[in-house]
Length: 91
Image (tube, rainbow, N blue to C red; front, side, top):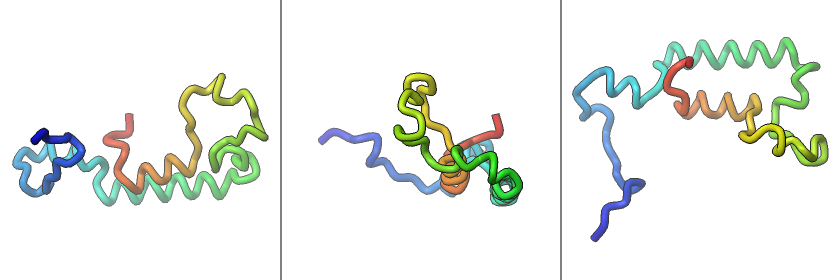
């Protein structure tokens, strides 16, 4: 039987080195909340300018968008990634 990487499950509490745990979990709760609040405030203040950047850019709006921008990036995606601890650092 072969072991599939995606089937491996671990409990972060079982990992001993604290720096490893922090790197796996991303931002701490306080940092994550602060970032989410800053993003939400920014989106609220600048909503008239950000209307096209909140959701994924559709082909109807910009048919050649994916030719120019190789990786989709929009504010809802950033917010969801923050919530799900996708980002490990501010860099």
